[in-house]
Amino acid sequence: MKDTKRALRRHHRQRMIARTMRSSICRWIEPEEDRYPWILRYYNNRAKCSCHMCGHRRKWWGPTMQERRSLHKDAEEFVWLYQREAIARLQKCCEYR
Image (cartoon, rainbow, N blue to C red):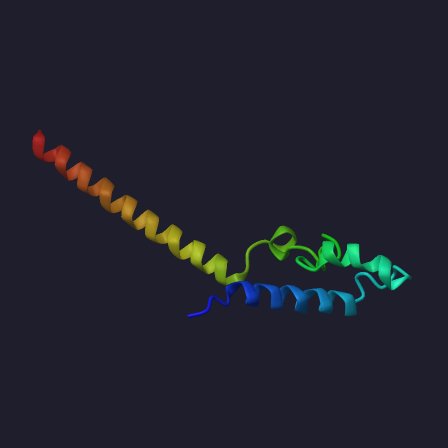
């Protein structure tokens, strides 16, 4: 069987380079030949800047609702387990006395 991982990576790299070339990230560079070094810089991560509109969402607005629910659920489970362990330790302590 032929290994196609390398070919797939090359295909996606060329696709993202072409997409970056069409986008407005590097359109301000006038001669098209001078755009290529900039395009190679931006094709992997196409965020224009790190402001609240372009950058990482959690940096500016915090965790998503799903993440908050998950953290809350995990915290409740942790408290429940901790209380259960504390009760078990107290019962062991009382048995020895």
